[in-house]
Image 1 (tube, rainbow, N blue to C red):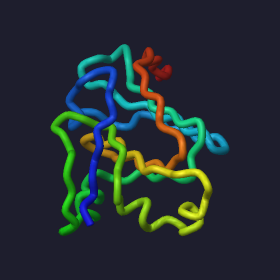
Image 2: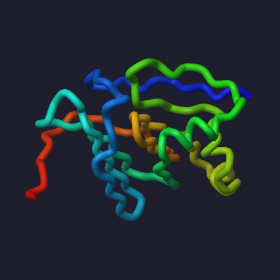
Image 3: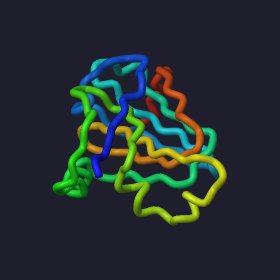
Image 4: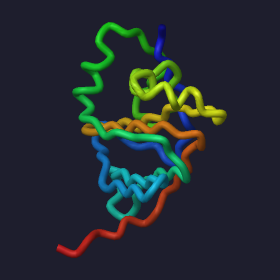
Length: 136
């Protein structure tokens, strides 16, 4: 079965291979992830979910190994946000997720270093926000 990557519209274009996950906050079922914009030290991309079932952060190299010989389509150059159909991460989760009356989807956010996978019944919100550097 083919893994299909459906691009999610982004508010900005940038080199994802130079980006990285800066911060991840998870509180009960809400998840907020901040990603670096390589050419902009004053702003970041914030991805948030109001409700999630599960998530993982994995090294991008390990993600490549996970695909193995499984065919996939839809990944674009310099694009980080996708809805994934027939994705491995969702397949290996508990079958209880599939029994839920609410449909759940897999979302994936790819950078040059890390990948964030999220399973949620709610689509993410993606915004550009100011980047407040932590004091040294």
